[in-house]
Image (cartoon, rainbow, N blue to C red; front, side):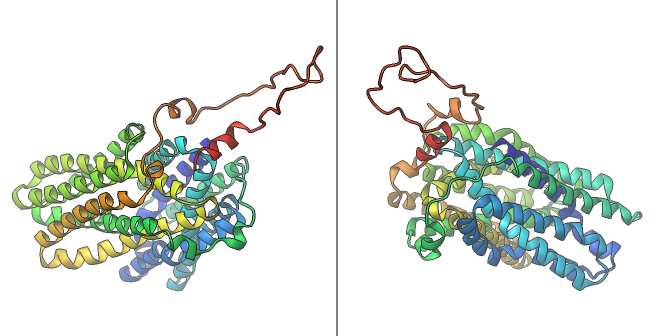
Length: 443
């Protein structure tokens, strides 16, 4: 599991190095139109909407580890070849290759992490993944900004080479990550029809997509232009706001994951939705009545509250989905979870930009109401999910077992034929390993 997390850091580091500078590279270095460059990035990130469900089926058929290795190979090939782009169609072709890798990465990575951890470990494991993703992407963006410059076009070649190298590093680390045992006949019996029959899971996905579109996507894409135009916040001020967001996520995600143990996950999701709703009103107030430095200070406080809601949501959402999924369908469950996030991030900016152009008040009030509606939906959904899945595993076992490395030595039993005076055993000793026992306790 630690190797899987280390590979995740390398992956997010590489993404941070390249993705923020991709449009600049295509437009300023290769002379591709700005609209076309944006379309390339849209293809790169949006292909997962249709590709992730297919990836989930492949995960359940051939295994999460093999699918993850293939996804990383596609990412390395796609991003690594961007220095050879000379025409727009070159960029679109490579975006398709790298986009296919993106589509397979999240479902296979989430499935492998869920399969390698017990129910008690999952909350901490998925929380640590969020920490590594945010930290790696932030550091990667800093490194990329120090390397890339349009005055030296070859510096972008180095960016893409480093990015491809991070994927190769992850592939090497996966050589030491075991392939979890698969349910016999899973490839023959599993289908998305079975997944969609789980009405509670389908509603969970729908509410998640609403929350992503109304909160995550609006803060990521609509907050910067809104505060710049209405509060006179500079680019440096916007950067400071998002730095505070990253800092809180890195420092607070694990403590919040530990605090969620033994608590109802649906109520936690509802609390996150309520906080998201309040922060939307906070952004509206700052943009309406404050300017300059004062607005930045207040918005930093708002983003702290937003980050707390992110920590709560991140601590319970993926572990809940992993516990809802039958082992034979875990890949499909995680694939549709990825699709719900992608739909939210595609719909949110598209709708948000239209509403913002007409009425900023309508944008942030509407986002707040949608977040509040999602919070109410999570409370209603609690009635249809069994308590053993709705409530996160308690804290009594996890602090001892989560992330602990066990060095085990054979123990001599009195019925061991190699020991002198051995006596017949009165019963057969259990041969269940620690890892196997952990998986059996996860359901």
